[in-house]
Length: 246
Image (cartoon, rainbow, N blue to C red):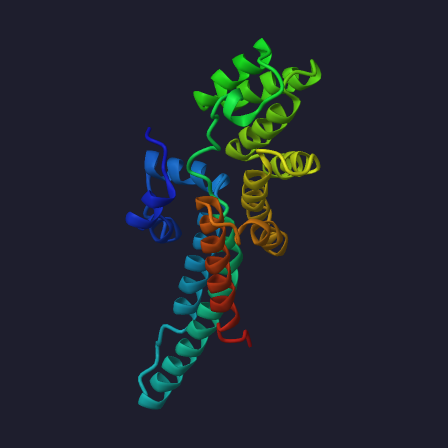
């Protein structure tokens, strides 16, 4: 059975069909398995269920026009509340989505990064990192740090591997440790990727602080940071303009 993605849920209307009990067999099982680990689709299913409840409660079994009009007005009001609720729910979800990282920080080699050592433990861990085997990379980098080899690069790429593995708290803490070493070749990226981890932890204000430190620079990472700050402002502004919940 192919693994279901968020794109499948949206394209095939799986949340709506599941709420209507029209998913069967492998498709239902696949959706439920995806749902267990996907907060975005859990929120979508809650919204669909709430919408269906409103529609059921306001489906007219009456004939008089004024009663129909009243029911329609009530339905519109309820829909407005649902839209406002959804806007407020989706804002933090959108913030977390902005923390997505499609490609890990690139390992450029010790000469470029000015790493402290070419220790074999670190080299083996970075082979796993380049292969996107995050668990093996993390284990190897922990051993490399314990052996005192390439301490700063091991810390940085350990945090990066944690980020790619979805271990957001560990990633944020790891990048913070890198930043304690001051102005190193890793500092700018540590700010940027720590901001990504913080967004995924619902700490948008802290993420802004990290991004603001590097956004003024003229390099590509500064431009990416400024673009992300602008997007955060747009998402926050959209949530603030949503109708108040009544």
